[in-house]
Image (cartoon, rainbow, N blue to C red; front, side, top):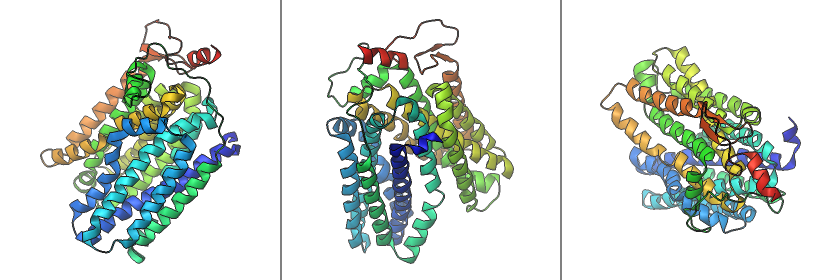
Length: 425
């Protein structure tokens, strides 16, 4: 693969490996740590919630990213978080649980800043046509770490304790900071001015990202499909214990097998995503990802172990495809000055509501058969995928119109040709 010979590609994939391993191991250890200190499963769950909570402030944090030098932001965010993690070395009792929560809240803030910062830096480090392939490789690297990091994190916590996991995570984040510092960037990506149809409150407003998403129909569609897919996937995740216990009559530990199979699917999906993107574009990838997620979710309704294993594989491919499509669309189609805000806003729309469906699914499970939430989830992704695949798009990633509509693509709104026109002017 020629892309892997590129220096910046190797550096970003390296960041995905070390930072992904660190985040997965620490997130698991934080819950175990809280459980060990308090004996309360609900207090342990709060540690995980602290990581997701800052995504609600995505637009505001994205505006901060757009006002700061992007690459130094990536470096210093990683280093500051590494320093915060070392504060956990003093945690010894339940009275200090607040410190664990505070650090995990900081971890959540760093996720928002790093995601938005990377989205802004990537177009200055690689040509547009390589962004999709890189995003697929990074997703593959991140999913690959999930096959190993939970085992390492749990084993290290059990044998040595939480402080050891914190030190390991801080060390890996320092490595990630060094990799960020080594990235070579141009002064600016190919010219991307905000089209005249985009109405923003002010150029520096933190709501400008939302304004741009609302005004940009292809980008809005990609983010919408990813958001619906994540929402519905959360509903399916909430009932996974019932799938294994009530449906398959397997021990709960069988979830580990399903997670591994899903991880294999995500790795394969990430490797294939770049080629699909370059050939067909972001919206078809999002649509087919949603339909694969639909098939995988529907198969989980069957009380047959092989069908549920296949479902895990399909979900592993489909769900990352919708996210990769949205990420790549943001990076390719957003004006450079707005990239931080648009990326952070998109991340908030895609990931923040998932916690609500997790809670909703758990509530429905107490009242309904587990196959009903799964059916709702499959229907939601079917509608999202079917809707985006019945649109007509420019082959270079252009604006979308209903199938059969011959309306032309507006230059500067959604097509690469429009971006190039703006650059030449």
